[in-house]
Amino acid sequence: MVDDVWTTDSSATLLLVGSGFQAYREWILRSVSRRFRLWLLSSSPADWATPYLAGQTFVDALDVDAAIAAVRTLRETRPLAGILCYDELRIVAGATIAEALGLPTTSARSVLACRDKRLSRQLMTEAGDLGPQSIGVTDLAGAQRAAERIGYPVVLKPRALAGSEGVAKVDGPGQLVERFAFTKAAHFDDVPRFDEDVLVEEYLDGPEIAIDSVVWKGEVRPVFVSHKQFDLAPTFEETGHVISAEDPLLRDRELTELVRAAHSALGFDHGVTHTEVRLTRHGPRIVEVNGRLGGDLIPYVGLLATGIDLALAAADLAARRMPDLRPRRARTAAVRFYYPARDLVVERVRVDPAGLPPHISEVRPLAGQGDTLLRPPGAFVFGRAAAGFAVADDQDTCRRALDGLADTIEIAGHPVPEKQPI
Ligand SMILES: Nc1ncnc2c1ncn2[C@@H]1O[C@H](COP(=O)(O)OP(=O)(O)OP(=O)(O)O)[C@@H](O)[C@H]1O
Ligand SMILES: [Mg+2]
Image (cartoon, rainbow, N blue to C red; front, side, top):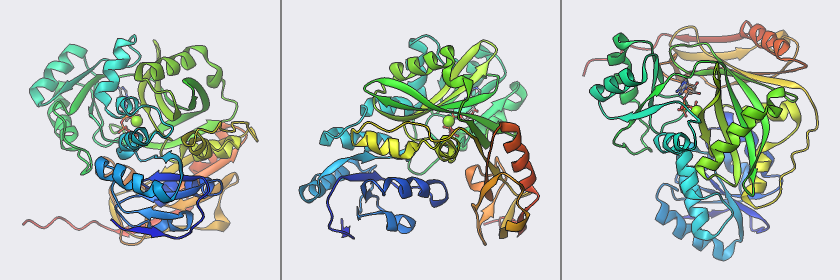
């Protein structure tokens, strides 16, 4: 283990567990590093995050015992105010390290209850069917039995992945064999294989929203409601999100009670969360509670809409400081992701700045020359070529602006080479 030190200033340091992908996470570090010194815990070089860091300890948080030992050593020379982690695969490790060192955190058990979708469902079912029926299975025969019991359509999903990898809707028995194989095959190197690693679930029909909340002393305060866009069925790849500062759902009693009940069932009492909900004919139902800042740049869209900086709030909570949640503006903001029309190896992703439609605030390439982009289900977030942002007074204006932006983004490339037989 090697320590790199880039500055000797030791005022209020937060340990950052994993830094993630630049296009999605740099805004967080830009914001948080203005208030806190950040010290990265990661086994890979800091790379793009370097300008925001005071230093780095080279150890992977997933090696929890080694990480705790390393952080104890670090603390001998550098006081730590807390631990910040937004990497879904490392949030349980982050909370475990915080608990071991007596730093502010919700319990590691409650973070695991968010992270392990089977445990989540058990707790939320016991608390009064807050989410769909869900049955853990190991093989196709188990999936067939579970789907018959629940009734089609069902959703198949991996027990503990992220980014909608391997999640699929199954409309009837004829699709089950192929879709089960798809879900079962989904795997991340950093996630251990569970037994009962596939969940078969009742399909919650209805629009999907997410509620970003701040949880302080056990009290859940919803801050943003985002509305998700899906255009790539049968996958659940999320192609965009829109947030209005004054969304009436923020004050909807049934919805806010559901979100509170879910946090209480999971035991999550401190930190920032991202709760996904489907608005069904029978009322709102929980898809899942993410025990961290939301992904897909959703809190950044919330910042554009309201001026409330949830990244800074997450950092403040990590240091047990009361976050500032006062809105600074009341707009509507949206992000949209753009995909190539077919699978390709990128030659260029280019936008003509002079041709941007009104209300577009920013466009970011998410892929560059030589990257292979596969349309879902070949890839999910890694199939995206660009992200566009709009800020306006209402959702329709944002949507129209982002529809228009599609025509000004050039995604050029050549066909993906066929795999050679070995
Ligand atoms: N039981 C269900 N009924 C209807 N839709 C579902 C159900 N479970 C999951 N989905 C859909 O699939 C999406 C991805 O599922 P889920 O959030 O559980 O997986 P994930 O891999 O954590 O995804 P992400 O990281 O994108 O949130 C959900 O946002 C939702 O649209
Ligand atoms: Mg999810």
